[in-house]
Length: 205
Image (cartoon, rainbow, N blue to C red; front, side, top):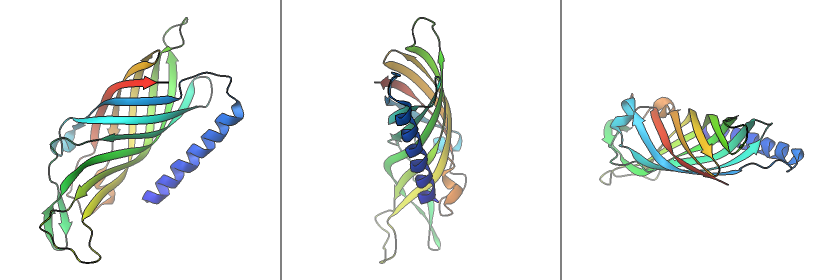
């Protein structure tokens, strides 16, 4: 499933790039978005790690006057991660976080101007979809054979909804995200958690 989702994302992004080139470059708008902030797990996911630093990079393409599509990623570094239970053979084992998780995907954006005089003061409504990956390592005391894995990658899709408030080249944002990590992995403990809030600042160019 992971390869299928990645393939869909790249096919979609390629079609958007082609559409953007065919429209020409007469319209000026910010194409590069660099984000820095924090990710706050909520619900049952709050038991897995604390408020954690988050960073992102997105490239924007224009669909029409007010609609855009972004392609990129956000990654975060789990702070004070817990050791969730994974099934290993006939046992239940606690795996350690690799201190790295990443979301790769697409955001659809509606831009709402907040000033009739200045186009660089606006509000964005973002809807996102993509692939979410969270990495874990097996404990050192386990012994592995040739076909055993020392790592677990929780792979799932994510859906997000959020807003940005932009003025000139800077902005602030807040996004809600749903990532059902345990949906496609029957080795991880049930009710792993799936909800989070991502907020921070944005630089665009």
